[in-house]
Length: 445
Length: 83
Image (cartoon, rainbow over all chains, first blue to last red; front, side):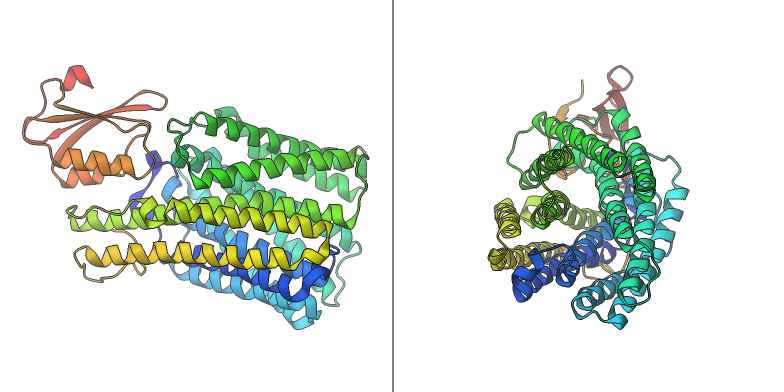
């Protein structure tokens, strides 16, 4: 969030983004519990029903949950364009996303038609509502920026992912809508991971990296061109995949990863140019994500050159690197900044409304102390390392399971405590007409 | 010359706003504050307005903003030359 462009009076009520942010860690815990219950079968192949359940707990309940919350806050605040009806629709979208993710996670292992179809419908409804109001908000942005354009492309990619997912769920539930489910699965992965998640992380990075880490801005040309270029590559990759031109599709995929890897290196260099070289836990998450991205790119390149044989273990390893190494690292790191910042932002607005600055507000680091954030990073590293080890030796599955439970639990506690601290601070400010933390009303203009 | 100077360009959110706000609200009639920041401090403006303060901000170059803040009843003499 670029403070130069923050729009005070357009932020949604705090309860809208917070409900998404505070729910996400619970899905990481749920993923750990599932891994503990199912054990090594999850790590044998990406096609195992329990593996699909675990994947969707993380991608929908963990990652997309945070991304929905982040967009509901960032569009109005950085672009001055609120998502229409977010106060009423936000809670409904959240409930549908939670219900859909849980239904899918239960439906895959049980091969339950009702749960799979019900989950897919709930998720489609959540995505449709979110997509419509997000695109309206993006359409209304008075001065589009690379971030808002990137968000628009990410949301369109989410719609494509959702459509493909719906067809796949129907097929899995015994209503075959597809002649080539494997190919559609591949496209579903590509648009979900590379489109929705990849593009959104980039769009958000343009804002949050310079702002939170006091780095120089990203090169303007990179900001303007990267998201459209990656989207174009995804379209080309999809067409090549549909036409069964496998080598060309692999080339497109490697080109996509190469561009992302270069952006990762640029981000690393920006971090090196920080004005204050303080130890920041979020930075460690970012750097881990970049290392995972470079490793993933190298592995895919080696596999493309035929130097690594395709195997279930290799597929699991690359999947773990993408989901846990790259995406979840960035999401965890961003949550550690965004939640305390939002709490502080709303407290500041409250002080402004009361025009009473006699009380010094807690800093972001007081709301979420660095020492605990570093412990979370330690658990995240442990989860990632244990998952990689278990991908190669599935009998080790209980280790990442326990680590994920601890990681999700600690993240939930940290975010919850930051929110409660902010709430206590709110109560200590002079009471307004409604009292309590601004969970029912938006900030006053 | 402004009576106070404050460089917050190296600080992470939300420190710049807190420091500028604190220094600006303490200004007395006839005093002024020059702030150097890497971004335009938009969140600060409503605070200054409510406090009866006046300000002028210029982007000297990309990533360097200079702002002069003063009490409404006593514009600083250096207003034209400084900002």
